[in-house]
Length: 105
Image (cartoon, rainbow, N blue to C red):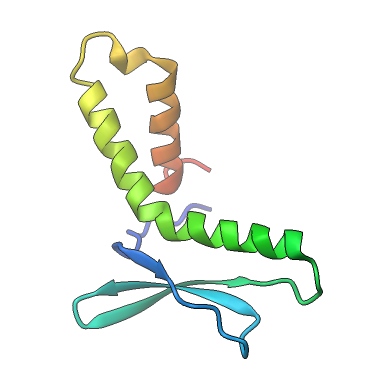
């Protein structure tokens, strides 16, 4: 089941890690408002590799609105150039956009 609800607008930011929380918070903000985007759990065991992976996942999630916008702009621009609309990279970009928008899984 796809959720086609519009996502919280960016920017999304990673809040500083806190010793009393076993997760990293990602929040979105508009003027005067904050939105909870995600809490990315940190491992509850001592494994630096897994903690680094969680932090990398957090950065990827926080960058999602910027990545989506950049990809949409790139596809829009390339579709105006002759021959580019069929390029495999543009087709992959369209599929990634559709996935982010909930049109495909």
